Length: 614
Ligand code: AHR
Image (cartoon, rainbow, N blue to C red; front, side, top):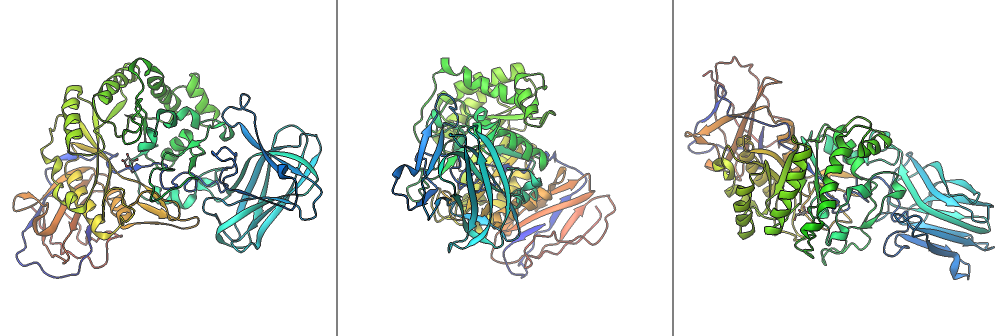
């Protein structure tokens, strides 16, 4: 595989490139290339979670966000929001609609997530929880409308009785629109209560009702990721402890999942998204299922009792840390425990009696300072006491260099963790200069999880960062260094994963999408090529007796695939010129001639491959 953006010309004095096929250096773990998922940039609600209705349960700070009322009624109480706190503490609010005799009718419109992506000929499932308090009936007409207000499809529904019930009805759209809306007309006189008003495409991933967007999951599946880290990211921590990610609130019936504000909602004044909340429709059960579907190891990351240190830096006192540690133990039981256990039973009730075989857990995200390490130790002790085979990941902080990193480095050498998560959001030059970062790490020390990295074309958090070729090539070069050191580096993931074209906060992102379309960036195809051409054993690839790592602008890694019996070469050319090299394979193996450039390579990439027996 060769990755380059250049034209084809000869180099002046080519160094011989030699691949030693006979002496594999290290095993490449199946987890080597994975995925980092965080609900940032509308990755979950408005993204991979296929729900089209925004604020379906009226639980946003402003319960009317996403909704518009259309009526000629003079009575301002036509729509009121009631709160049954106490009885339904996880979903207290619902809408009460009073319909007086009105020739124009009464309509609630939902605007979706920057509109709704609706496709011609596709089926949709409308549903709502509803009751008629008086015990009578209410006729409802449902309509999909396009950006100009024209009807695209619709159906009707009758609500009856004073008991809350779920009503569901399918409908089909005649036309396509990226920013469609949903109209709900209440056509009888009287009062109706409504909650969890929902619209899902039927064409979800694996056709699951209330499931995930098929095109976005397909892009993930196509990467053949070794793991999925979830749910982040800073979202693990929360801006304050109250808004940390609490996995127990994300399982069970969706109407009982306690919605909270998304911490990216107001993070950046340059990209405010005040309508960004977490419904947890994509919760921990769906996450485990997704990982299983696409053959990735689950890697949950949990709060260590410290809120985001870039925000409030709120810390739970050590003597109050037990519930946080218990959350970690219970999550492992939820994933792996027998159906007779408290949390294994909940998993089985959701439809998955078999365990999810979770083997790893991250404690804290980008934490730093002594408070982190004292909390980490307590988690590690408790988790290993109950689950001695669990792999636990310690975070090295927000950056892979500087004072915070140096402090972490000292501390972690006292703790001797199994795996350490390092993050790098740097400019492309940093990536090129640091390709050899792990060449000198202790081969008998902790393993490295390169848990978040992305070359920044402008600067970290700049809205002008681009997913350009320079960044993609710099990452590819850096990744050759990660793979060459696969005895130390066992997991890697680019971050962030998703960006909604109309709802993002952070750029660059691996995959961009809008309400109907999605596409991988150059960075995505770099990740995909490395992941789908991983191999099982690292081979030496040298130029002038040194790893091919920067000489003449070439960076390389080589691998042997023991299952496919293939030699895989990944060579990155970061110059603006094509380079021709003879590549010699030192081997006693008999080779089948006719090696091919991997699919997905740029067509103007070229290298000449000369094969020799060693
Ligand atoms: O990937 C975006 C953010 O970058 C993550 O939430 C955080 O861990 C890092 O600072």
